[in-house]
Image 1: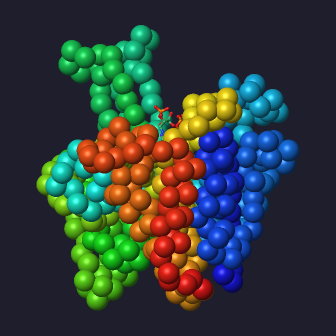
Image 2: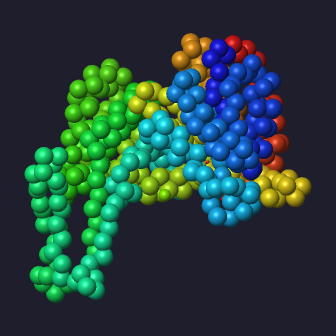
Length: 408
Ligand code: NAP
Ligand code: MG
């Protein structure tokens, strides 16, 4: 390796798995170079969370990071770890610093059949992470406000005003009710479009996008138009050269097509659609423990991680001395994603090959029937065998050793 990866360690069971991955399946094969940041809760407390800020800066400087799952403190965690305040989620801090889009994709193996057996290839969900109902303003029109007339009011910097009626609760029988105001910005939508189209090109997959623009003729239509503008201005030709397509369709049609599809594309989703659909897609593919996640900034910085959390219940069993069978695949694929990306940026084909081989060895281990408890419960393989996390990683390492390729 030449340029170091930004390595962000984390908490609980995933912190244990992190060290084992480095020890068993990376360390023996690669002269790993990283800039290490400990985002474990103790270090966040000691540095008043400055370690998270420095890690985010390092990703902006070096371009590629890999992150372990971390605890987002709540009241219980403040007590458990004796924290002086309730720190923000590290993921939120990093996302804000990079202004990125998160892409989530499942790792597929033959050991687990998706609930929809037609799905042969991964479906990657890209969720817009700004605005809409997540930044809404809401009012209850009730009691003293029953019968109120509700309007949208925009005041320009020079004082001009524009009004639009939302609903007059004084007309008709329903005098009480609810209202909601939501917004988004052209800049955020355009940056989302760039992230999705850039990722489609990088990964050689088609891009799908859907909204309800037949009903929401201004709001949803704006998303459609900005995606169209960005596509025609910056990507149409490059998509054609790469042999991939951009499909815009109504959100209902998109959902129907996703179900009928064989997978193998990126599905760009509005904030709410992405929230809901990513849980559906993850579950339909089998297990949250097999979902990988990458945050891509408009400048092309990449941060890789598992989509799951710190697997707290397994950690307490681990602390009690029990052997745990926690799935290490999503965390392992965060590492391979980051190593491959570093290899591409630095022109190190050996590093890219290593990432490919490590992924192949991991899949082959599971296809060969050696798996952790979560997959064991789902798999229909006749000769399946449940192993602990460390034994699973050791089996992957053994397969890698059997692979005689040398890595740069
Ligand atoms: P979680 O860690 O994802 O675990 C929820 C449950 O899903 C586990 O109890 C386990 O089920 C199953 N599971 C998840 N990952 C697994 C794996 N790799 N192998 C096997 N089973 C797995 O979510 P959580 O318990 O809600 O959250 C725990 C901590 O993680 C919280 O402090 C939260 O703040 C943090 N979190 C961090 C991130 C992040 O850093 N990206 C994301 C989400 C949550 P069973 O117990 O039934 O086996
Ligand atoms: Mg959700």
